[in-house]
Amino acid sequence: MDACRVLAQYRLMRFTKWDYLAFPIVAALAIGLFYGALRLVGFFGLGILGLVIGFIAVRMDLERDGASSDPKVLEEQFKARDRMSRAERADFHAGQLARLKPLFVAQVVAAGLVILGFGFHFLLRGL
Image (tube, rainbow, N blue to C red; front, side, top):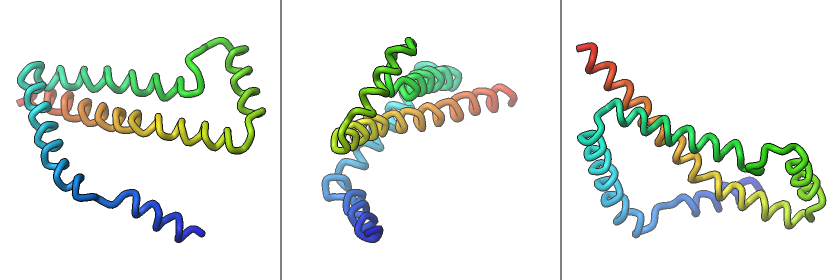
């Protein structure tokens, strides 16, 4: 059973012809966007932009179960999840995983911007 899951995941992760065509275009756009932002705000600005993106992504990740800070509302949400059928719970879990993938990408981009931005800012200021 585990081998079937690995094979299915491999099929999902394989590049298609469209991916081979789109990847260089997306990479060129990302490099151009990075260069334009660097010229506009400098390395320190990229670090600040990374911090802002990171804080927003982490906040959204923390609030994935609900944005309410009221304990009674959260308690009702958890009780409702306990009453869900197995299929509804699986659907809810799959939906949450689909929503969290872009958040992970945003967190990685934010970490990269913080490291590159502040790293190069302080490295080049010291020279």
